[in-house]
Image 1 (cartoon, one colour):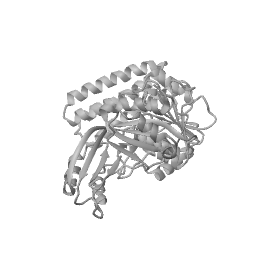
Image 2: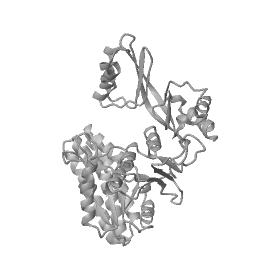
Image 3: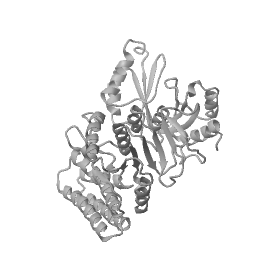
Length: 441
């Protein structure tokens, strides 16, 4: 079975949705599960609606709902051609926006917020199903809320997903094409919830692992993962093959094409992941497998919004258990550390969000003098066995002579060398590395 995931830009316009229908029916030799995101812009609009409701701004929320509904009404006029299909699509749009209008009168809650966010994927899949039906393409709408579950820690329950999904597929073994929602799920209380941002990638990978798929295809608007950020660097090249470890490093450290969580479920079952371009389907894209394919540097990625926390304590640093106590503070606030450096008198760590920063700093203060630096960027150089590859480090640091590198992480992974730089130097750093490591300007 093949898994095919299409992001918001891939289904964001009626003609794009038509193209997706062509792509998923091009090769019908094996069954397919198609995972769809919400139409591009929809989730942001739904977030804004929820935020307005949470702030008690009902008029603003109503205005946003009406604007979004108008967009969908225009969308379906171009999506389908027959009166019968249009009537069905219009009924679906009316049903979901009636729900959004009804909740304007209900007291806002976190659970209600999750219901609001779920409307995007429910709409995109139902409307796509109407289009497929109009075209005479046999398929089944597969509700993600019937099999996609997370536990009390918001972690997907892969074994449960496998059982529930397997049962549904077995009951419908005559079907070869299934359409399901990305992103949405049910939590441990049975309420509608979601897999957070980028969750459609996660859904696709979890489904691929659950059914032991032959491949998990992630279709976006770029032809695979590139060796550098094409939004910043003029000349970049797509990477033909990556290992799961390399892809995980790139995704975690800023490569936007793939969500970091997408890697591990597919890796667990050794399901190849392909990153493909909906707008250029003939492009090779990037294949992610167990094997790296080659040795050396593959790509550079940048992760913004990095905060440095410095703990200086000549009295306690060498004391037994000191680092453990520091890490326990971050564990308490469920805040992950990206980089760490130590000296005889200080420890510096980086985090990528400051939601609990005030509380963390307060609890660290008994350990020493605490200083905080924001507006930093982690630049990560990723490849296969680059720590052992000749000349990589000399090329890397020679390229970065003009850059005030704040921290370096080397040796923790054979696939990654990371540097922390002020965010104001991000563009220059990426450009210098593009020239120094890849010979591209």
